[in-house]
Image (cartoon, rainbow, N blue to C red; front, side, top):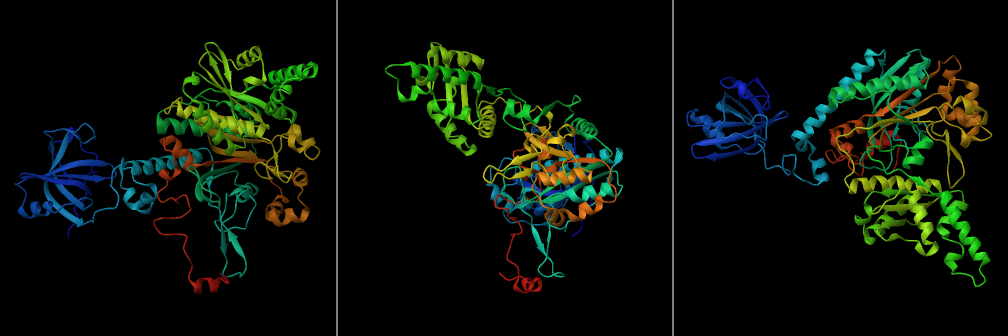
Length: 606
């Protein structure tokens, strides 16, 4: 069997090439005989072209063409000619190849999945036969797009003085918020490496080592529950800079975003990007990664509710006969939320009154329970007044004033949550995005970037009451808040920043602590003893004894960034061989049981 040397890819031929000789290689998409002619669609990563075998070709070539079936791998040489029946659905639809030579490189059995973009095959089957799934035009386009983004990343950061440095994959376990994947050491029995959740420690050591500006496109590993935009192994664009402040890091990233969007989407991004403080993002959108492609912002009506509750309580106290149990103290859901330090907030769905039936609202209420909500209240603005799920607790004029505070108009629907601020934000943050999807309020061709800054430095575990670092214990506090680091840690803001695109965090970072005394205060605020800090972070603290520059950095989630730019719903569509929802590799069968001899060599018994 001889190889026909390719002169062109299948998707390249155009009407201007008519009369040219061409040799292509690829897979048979389909083949059919019509009288004395055989028509074969040949496919490679660039597209499809029609090949015609007629009675003028050598008899052996025609006989071979008659055997062609889907997914046979072949080479064809011939001449480009204009098609009589053109196909406007493909770029090569005006031309075809009149074949002269045919070589069948390999035959194929009937594949278990169709090789076409709109096959609607179950995802698990697609992942099991990923090597077939990858033959689809969409998947090849996705992989090529990802490669283009990686090339742009390397060029941009190299042009801005960054050195690409690889950091170790076998490292010591470090506390970074998720479970580590552990790798047993044969040389050191009973000891383990960890796979890195991020290069955090090493990127800071590179700054201590004088690298000044570092970046890499790096694999990271986290043993955590999966979802559409999460994998056990994922790719970060990791970077760190010395002698910088927060604005310096952000400025470099904005230049990258501008270049990325221009070269990949031909979109001119206006700089500087908008910035929201964490507090403002939560108050307006109920999320620290808000989608700003639509409005539907949260409105706090706690003050109005307080007045209404006060009136109800006064009337109940002054009534000689009393009132019903519910009305005697207003609406207990609202009053309890405010009394416990929470709030009453809501969103207005423009014209939503007719879009959501009572059954729809009940289903939404059940869904919101996953976010901690005990219930969901609603108001419909009708022609003849206000209809609510809590009408019996308040007077008609009070309900009208409440609707007015929301800025609601006739036909609008108001959805209200009352609880701790954490629950209220989570509930309404989910609702505004869910409703925007249901009502098709989101412009899929729009890309909204923004920065969220001034995150809290600490967060408290509601069950244990213990403090933990919202990002990591090397995040630098806002200089204005350092005095409260130990006395009032929950009020301290971090010099941390996330970059958000269309409601997804695509990157995040911070300015790091480089002063050993400030670092000691940070550990004290977290309740970590010197022994604990030494055991967890000893090698980094040791390096910091010998002089470390002020530094800060950021990491992008490459898979998620590419997913959003491609308009995909899952990062699995941007990864060649992803894991499934059970963290399994359906192609190879990993994870799998190890051989007893291999376990014995590692000193492991199961």
